[in-house]
Amino acid sequence: MDYFVFAVVAAVVAYYMFFRKNKNPGGYNAGNAPPQRQSPATSSDSDRQLVSNKSQIDYLKAQWTAAEKQRDSGQASTFPEWFFDPVTERQLKRLKSDGTEISGGAVTKGAASDLIGLREPIEEEDCDLLKFFKLSTKGMNQTIGRYEAKRLLSNLENEAAWKARPAEPMQKEYLKFFGLPAPKGLTASEAQKLIAGHTEEAEGWDEKKAAEWEAFESIENDLADPETREDYNIKKPSLTAIREAMAVLRATGQDADDIQAVVDQLIEMKPELERGS
Image 1 (tube, rainbow, N blue to C red):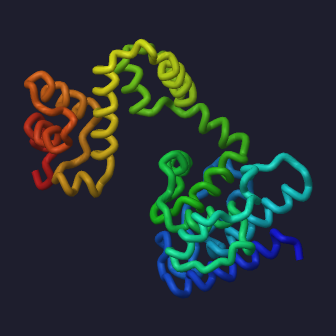
Image 2 (image 1 turned 45 degrees about the vertical axis):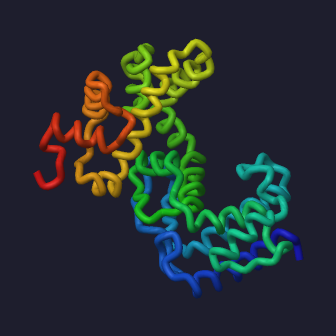
Image 3 (image 1 turned 90 degrees about the horizontal axis):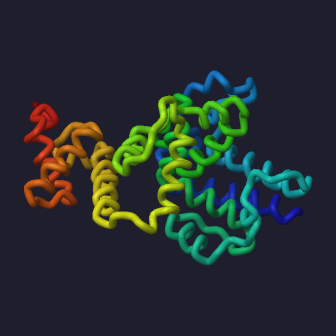
């Protein structure tokens, strides 16, 4: 039996046993599929095949089979070169801690990574991409999110639409913060290039200003999280409000890097941001 086919079978069996022992891994119950969602209008008929029509096991098996076919055909692979490397000791330890028993020679590094990713939250970039195409990411894990993002971008129309999307609010905020030009109609891809270029040429950066941006980015990231906002009893503030609150704190000699101080200042400036108000 081909090594990779054996790896697929072994991993699927092991993961099936894992599902029986651990219900609701990564937000799903044993044998269930990722949540129902609407396919993007630009998808082909084959793309409209919802992941929810399959179990996660079958979904992963299909991905691994595709990886094997690409490898054997010699065509350009959409999988990383390391995908077929042997599983690592660290991966085996992680799988074991998750309750999945797999022998060292029975699964590849890529398959092990996929199994581990079923217990991790979806990556932010993949989450943003799926939301852009109006797909639900509720309960979606890292592995399914990664494959779904790749599936979407395999459609040339989707790829073009993603590249042409408007610059994101935090990208615009970065450009404004550092005094960089933000032309009308700037796309996210163009903005990223401007930011990357600015970062690469950052030898003469004002360290104080760079630290202020880092603090702003950290506070914004924290307050973008619903659970964190609930902990601090605050509604989601705008980027402008956060920037102004931190500026007030600095002007008055207070710690603008402290999220509690920023939250207190936000509520003082805008009482309607307090939950229950």
